[in-house]
Length: 334
Image 1 (cartoon, rainbow, N blue to C red):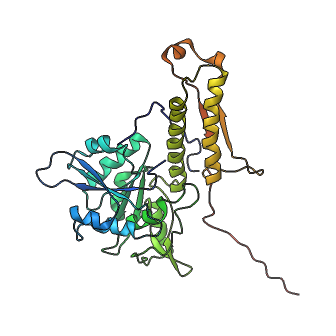
Image 2: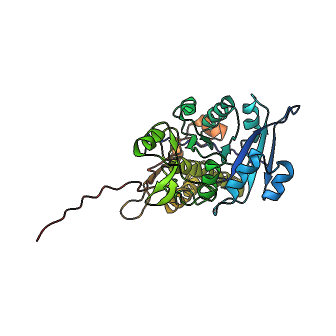
């Protein structure tokens, strides 16, 4: 069942380019003819899945490509939606324990509708696979869309990448260089073609130094997937931590004691985010984050009457990863 929360968190990314379920996949599939309501079901094995979706279906094939990878979540969901009514399905099941939507075989209009709806929530991702780069323009610079370009028929690169990396500790990995994916063969592209793929807002699976791996780890906006995923980790864990403070204390008061309790909760989240690699470290290994809290005397009277603590303003610098290197070698003669 989805959780309800009294905590609303907005992540404000000041640098434009630089917990449960944060690595789980939901496969969206159109409902059969005559079905008028969306549905949602989770599966812990392919044997359980094929009772509802036979081995030849796109749902089964994508689930298999995901679950056979070494780091897969071990659980996959299927969200059945009524065509042209994707908004209703997302609203109904958005708070379930999935974070990445796959839409194999869906109409482009339904994919774009899901992408836009996810963007409006500023949480979760649509992961799209295509063999036609011209289709990606419809998603624009949507930072909640991850595109994969793959030309090999019958291979499910997007599902495989998710099975390999999405369920690992958020912040501890980059989505570039995901290698040796089971059931996926690299495509043969030159430097210019690969540059065009990235410019179009997609990632590919290619050979680098003799090893098959993902060519980049970018969202459609050009931002790095691990940074945006890190935002989601912070949002989810901030909401959970603050909600637990309200639940586990008989009263959280509008005084220095209550505000200190909230501040300690926020600090614990940002400290763990630093340990995980979501937040960049200073030279002394402390995290590059700040947490601004209002003083009791600064709280407006109306907020006290409404029992709402406003003015919590954490900020942080996202951690990066080395994706390229430039080396200048000088050979000196004796």
